[in-house]
Length: 287
Image (cartoon, rainbow, N blue to C red; front, top):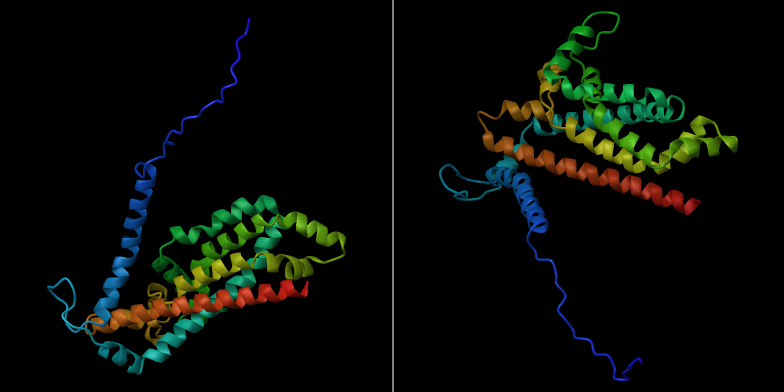
């Protein structure tokens, strides 16, 4: 015999246990705050010193002024040195993109077995001190048939070498993400050459990697001191060489130059991002 009941079942609402804000989430937040402070505090300190009237034994500057900024901008060496650094950095980006993009593309399409070797070679600039690179280039290009020692051309080539890991990594990651080989095969079946495939199919899809590599190359090149000091020195003085030269006598100017270099890097980054995003928008609209 079974007993049934027509009484409706009742459910008791119980509070749902929610994870607290401790543990991994709190640890991540703490690490993020510490990392942000580690990155921003030195930059804020440099900025405050660049506009400080006096700052020796106090937590914050005694007063603030823009006099140091005006003096730096009006200095006869300001525009020439910054202009040379801009020329060298932009030329480095152009050379790096023109040289590296076809090479990395062909590695993915025609010689994938060589990629580990090229990847290892691209990391060598990290292990090679800049002073060793500078002295090696000076020694190599100081005698005929190719004499480039002391010229901006050799400085740009040195910048290309130091920026090689950043440009290669940006291009390689982008090419891996879009399955380059299948795209190239599909383009070839339609009768396109490899140059046409690179120009019309691959480049629009790896613009993000090119931008990332270009920004990193620019940040490494602009304001660089060691290579500039050894290769060109005062004959073609860049902003990095001038900034270090005035440190002992005019420390406020030095910090102003650091902040100006930071601002220029951000401005160039925005220009590059805007240019590539606009180009991508136009290409999408034309399809």
